Structures are given as structure tokens and as C-alpha cells.
Length: 227
Image 1 (cartoon, one colour):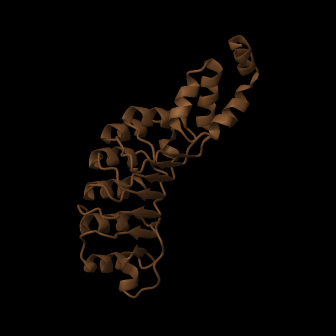
Image 2 (spheres, one colour):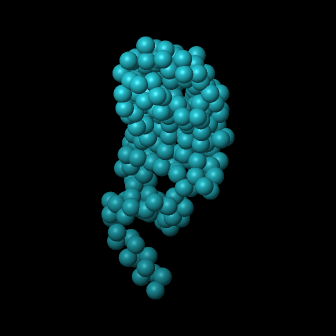
């Protein structure tokens, strides 16, 4: 019976295996599948290479496992490593390892929402190599102006940024960001400790900028939602 099962497995082409594995959401299942045989391992690798979006939300991953998966998923343009209710073990070391992967220069969207184990050091390392970045969510983290300076100088295509409850960011970082990033369309500043006068200054620099939730309070139009 075991021999018959192995024979049936061997008949499945790698492309079909890759398609099946691409429908699998659990990284744990993919890890187990890659250990079945060499063909299945190739199928798992191909399935990851086909992905355009990769999300660790809802999974308890660490630096090594996260960077290993990102390295295999070298065609992704969207990366989500947001904190989940199970917790997230990713630290600056994980961001450093991800910054060394092949896909980092093609990333259009990165979410680090609520990841408490990261600092400016890791964020700077990552965004300094993500030169195509258009959407960044670093809300709920402990980053400071230093991270915004890095975004301002390394991400000229940035369109939206979420700074939800980033209470260590000051008006200096925001002004530098808006001054340098002329394609910036919207910014989420909910829960930040920044005076309203700062937002007036930002709008003087970029009148079309949508600032959530301050824009409506300042009477310059409706709020443009930032995810």
C-alpha cells in the first residue's frame, strides 16, 4: 500500500503540485509538504515563487522562518508582516534579512503594523532598499523621526503612509517626509502627539495632501481613507 501511495505521488507533475500548494494558506502545512519528497519540495518552492502577495498576519513567525519564506517568494510586490493576535516574533534582525532578499527592490506595499519588536534600525535597513515602495504601514510601532527620514530619502514613489499611534514621531519627521516625497497623497496620523499647527504646515507644503483624521477638522475637504 505504501509503495502504491508513493507511486501515485510520483505521477503528479510539479506544476500541478505548485498550483495545489499555492492554494494553501498555512505555512506550517507548506513546511510539512516540502518534507514529503524532493518533488513536493520543488512544488512548494514553485508555489512560493508564483506569489505576488505574501502575508504573515495570523501566523506566529520568527526572523528566520519569515526571511526564508520571503527569499523563496521572490516575485511578491506586497508584504504584510503585521502583528496578529498570536503575536509576532519578527525583530530588526528579521527586517535586515528581508532587506537582503531578491524581491525587496520590487515591493510596492509593506505593512509592519503593530510589530512591537522592531526599531528604527530595522525599518531603516528595509526601506533604504525598498526603492519602489508606494504604500507603507508602520502604525502601532515605536519608530521615531529617523525612520521617516529614511523613507523621505529612499522612497521617492511613496503615496500613502500609516503612522497610527506612532507617538515618538514629531513634526520634524513629518515635515521632512512631505518635503521630500512629492508623490505622497495621504497620511494617517491618528493617535499621534503632534500639534495641529504641524498639519497646517504640511498642507502649506502639499495642499492636496489628505491627512486622516485632521483634514476634515481643518476644513479643507473630506477625509481620504488610508488603509
